[in-house]
Length: 119
Image (cartoon, rainbow, N blue to C red; front, side):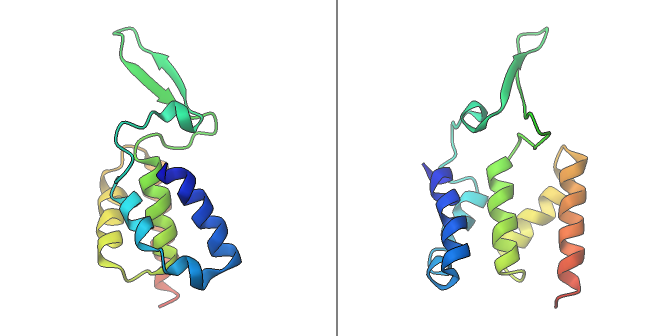
């Protein structure tokens, strides 16, 4: 499961950044959504409800975004490692403008503003 491996990668990076960086392309694959096809949000702690039309909806107990949650986590983590990466910046550009949740758009904007000062 890529998400379990992502959690391991985060911890590996804290303990041994040089070793973790040899596997950083793995983060970009998750950011692109590779390996996440068909993954149910219920596996990640989301609560499923059904609306009056029978459509299944998912909500997070802590207001975390459901849509593209893991892709966002991976892209943001990678961005912190390499703010100049074109592919990750394209993904963040897209989410900063088009993500359905305002808090996500705002967070990405603030993250990138912080990065401007570190240039």
